[in-house]
Structure formats: structure tokens, C-alpha cells
Image (tube, rainbow, N blue to C red; front, side, top):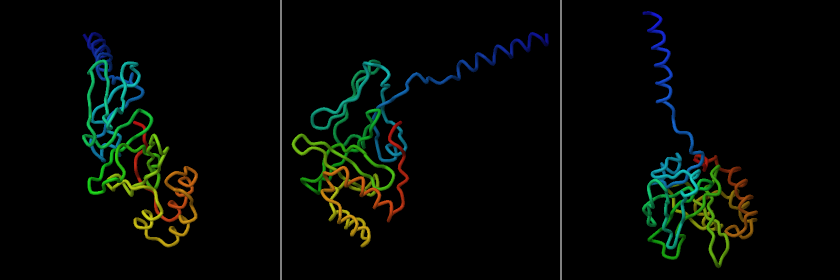
Length: 195
């Protein structure tokens, strides 16, 4: 009888382990973030598994994000419905300031997270432009010396930034700005980009 109990417990152990296993078949995900907290913690509101060749995420006309899933069909997110999205490699934040007509608008690729939040956006006729925000809940602004002076009133910082040319269009100048920023301000604690 004791031997039968040991065999039963031994078999029970394997059946419990098989039910407790988590699906780890999805190595890479893409998806959308509802708010800045979800964006920061990499918690998708809705996601797809990029291992499946039929599943994908796209940004179409007028900044409409579409998630295609063989299992769940297509889901569509209008501009402003979500805070941002990840394509599985990069994170993008949506921004629109209705008080600043002609200001930055659309999805911005998060370029830098260890310090000043730096974004890029590609335009058909203007190439890549660079932007920044003080944190995820702050407005996105064009990476211009006058904007940095207003947001970071430090004479030494401003003096060093003044030496940089074409900040909003020059990747090398943006790289130098990161070093200058870290010299005068502490690092931001934002989470890394990939989920």
C-alpha cells in the first residue's frame, strides 16, 4: 500500500509539472501600449507573436496602427487611441499637442533612454529629425537649443550645447548632446526598449 502511494505521488508530480508549464514558444512580440506606465514597464495592452509569419504590426496612412494576427484577425488603433507601440525591436511614442498647431505630431521612435529621452521621426521631404522630452509624460519638443535652454536652465550645460551644430538633424551632435546631458543631469530610470 505504501509503495502504491509513492508511485501515485511520483506520477502526480509529473502531471502537475506538465500543467504548470508556460508557453515560451513566442520569442519576440510586438504590440501596443495604452499609457506611459505600460510603455515604461513594457506591458502590452494588445500584442502579437512575431514568430508566426502571418502576424505583423504596421503603421498605415494617417498614423493608424494595425495588428494582424492569424488567430485573432486584424485590430486597428486610431491616432491617440494608444500611447505607443513596439514593432518587436523599437518603441514608438505617439504625440500630438492640439495647442501647438504645426508642432510635432505622430509616432516618434525612442532613440535614447539612459538620460534625456531622445526620439527620431523620418519625413519624406525632410529626412530624419530629432526631438526630446524630459520624461514620458512631458511634451515632445524639437531638439533645438532654445527649447533645451528653457527646459534645462543651467549656464554650463547651455554653453556646451551652444557648440553643437544642427541638433535636430545631426546624429553626431545628438550623440554629443547625450554626453553633455549626463555630465550635468542624473540618468533617467526608463526601462529598456525590447519586451
